[in-house]
Length: 418
Ligand code: AMP
Image 1: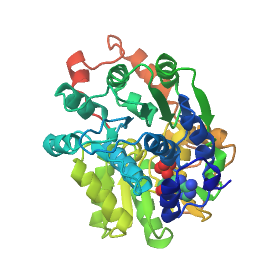
Image 2: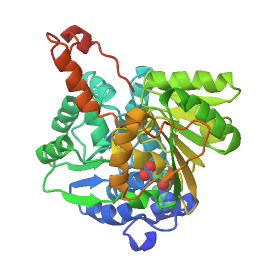
Image 3: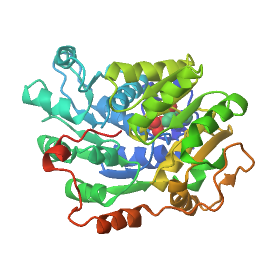
């Protein structure tokens, strides 16, 4: 299929050609006609599938149909809610690119940055607003934003939005939009809570699914290293010196782990950038910029901080820690091996992660190639640790210690680990 077969305005098609896209991706082929037809849509698709254009292109098309002419009198007719600031900025960049030959105006608002310039932007008149939930509700409370004219509401990365505790905010936002609005919900995974949310807010939705499992990793040469946890750093240095070259994304499970690895690599003479949830907005953006520009070739990130961000075209992904969620493995390695090129993934598995590897191999229905004969092997007789039973056992052996030992106050103050 070619883009010109889709009922899109010539100014949009021109922008697409300028951007260098030849054909719509599968999610675009399926979603664009549904959005144009005013259907509610629930789509399971991850970053890298072209999902942003799948909603942005038909939304721009519909806004052109009844274009507001005057700048000042513009009403916000499309709202995209995104869980993270980086993703919100990226979505706005995409909208701007696709709408560059129209006079539609876009704005992006997010927390952690000064509110005044964002107010000024909106007061100038905006058709398409991209926002993180908290800042959006703040601006609406201050009556800077009026959601009564919303025609299309997009909830992007819904699973992450719920993981980050935005469920009430999302419900509030939906209520503030008119009753007859169209809702498009995109989510990388479809856990029960996302389905429940979708059932409560979508009207007779069309479902779009893009398979993300084994096919995503088709062009990735996957390697597995069994290594004792305390030797992972040495293995990483060994591979960086001898084997892994080019642009490299290293995943760690926690922000503490990201910082620790950064210090070790810097001490060993590597230039690295890092992103995790404790970094300021400008520090995260700067890290992404220098990595994308190639000023540094190593980026270390947590899954949540990296989610949704368009860091692709990598030479290699290192799973310094193995994720306990098998789908996360697929998402991580799917960032390399794109556009017909081959990529590499290197997974470091310690004794406490053996069971995670088992679940991953079940999901992808293949054995990851085991690399033996490296300098830091794990003792072959090491047994897998079953995290659940280990937890139960320790509970049983400590009478008087109840489940969830932290006080309510401490739980309330709990800092995000990503
Ligand atoms: P997304 O899944 O929206 O984050 O998009 C991932 C990447 O795919 C972005 O860099 C887009 O610019 C790119 N992209 C989106 N649609 C197409 C297309 N039809 N052809 C080629 N690249 C595309």
